[in-house]
Image (spheres, one colour):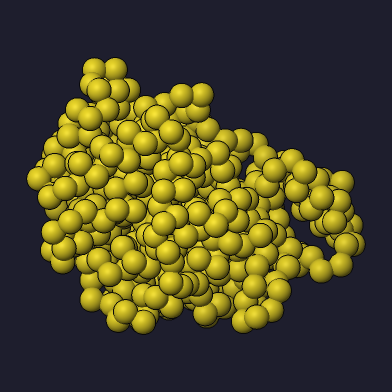
Length: 491
């Protein structure tokens, strides 16, 4: 039996949270740019939970903007998918299987742009959510009257222009826009890009005023590890347990956080926040952003290349190795935490870090290192370089674990029998062809276009990275980790 709306009632396996029929009749209130597992495992999870509690009472129209993935799977399953939640919460083992009914339909921007624009005429649609990766929020000077525009900000502006016309510029027609991309002040940056694009398209002043005054651009932070579809063996086991097949099944951890910058009016629109304490709406969410961005995401970024090169497929597998686990723990708590460029009490950052380490060790998650390397360079710049610069404000010597993680990044970017999924992949391929490793280190560190600063000027950094890169190339990642094993963790 395959998961679909008509088959839900026939699913009899115990312990499965199933949607009530009436949920399928709820109005569409959210436009979501992105079909990825993070959106399905966090924002859509909260919306689905709220709907089941009779709180938000609205469903999600998803815009598929890329050619990758299979939107047809959503059609075959009527937008339904299973989220298998595994982990420990408050000392209790959690095993939940939830059939999410938050998504009403998925529309292809390439093939169904007119239908997407028609959603702007729905007065109940008040919320826009996005996750287009870190490279999605950038300015592309383009005509937004294309069918469709190429960039995400172009698509968003075209939709908002259609909304403005549909509501005749009324304040009530304004939207709450909540990007979830892991970019500092993502809401503010997206708003600025959309305004620049409106000027490029010479849209009238009344419309741009409506964009500022009637629409709310809320920066937000998402935090939940949702690795996605499990491996074939685990998938088969889960489907046998559930009693049906599901092309969109995903596993997620128990921990969940969606911190949204907003006031009481934003809270009233995003009423799904009432359903789960994991949704936090406050005027200032900076402390949540810094803790998550630096300790979880930053550690992932500085570890993924090393983990992959050491032959570990997943985070869980790597954390089972004493040497690698010590590297991750010390990197997070001894180098990154003290250098977070924001004032955070040491005890709070340590408590958060230990919680993250437990999440990394979750035996139910198969988080692939190779997937974490996606857009490696932009992640390194966003998540780790501010920490490095802050470290040098406190010390005059390089952080040794950071240097090893960065060296592994450089070696990974050389490529091999794996795909480097990074918009700087061609640049690095050329650098590796043209330069010896020692020269390449300085070339990359001094490239201001990559880091917005000349990192080669930081005392001892180039030398430390060169030394680690030499070991990685000649002796391998396992040897590099073994040498670091001399650094004893006092956790």
